[in-house]
Length: 199
Image (spheres, rainbow, N blue to C red):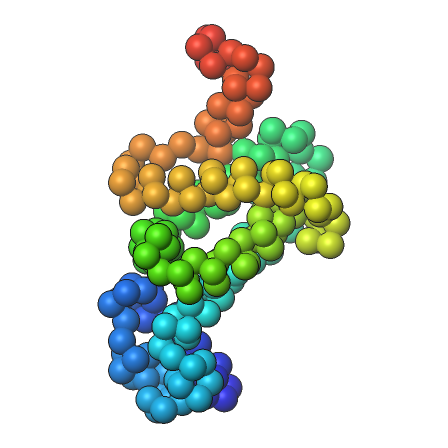
């Protein structure tokens, strides 16, 4: 790898170990083996590098979930829509439970968005693509098969659920729903049976 890639990998490590706001340029240099001047040369600033690190980390995390084959035991190829919904959420929930440093970094960044216009703009630019990727994961198809309307309408729905579950995992990790719970909730909401008898 060159210095640019080394710096990005170092910044991603710092993101997990120290968090977004507490990472300094010297931390990144120590983690990457690059020199201080190379941050400015390759990224313009430490903040720009950290923005790239949070985006790259998020993309890699989502890709890790997406790499589960559609016909695997975790997500049967012939699953009914709600069964697939539950199975995919279980994959996400497993990662949420076991990758707490990543989740903490994601939630930290959410809190910074109102006061950091550059961070907000950087994440806002990739948010639609992230929603499209989530639709593809849940449907078990390549991103190229997700139409614009599905990405616009369903992508933010999945993003809202995922963000909420990340926050909840930090607050009440012992009371997290399962994929089956989420599917049951969706079924009851759409059937108008929220207050009805649970299955």
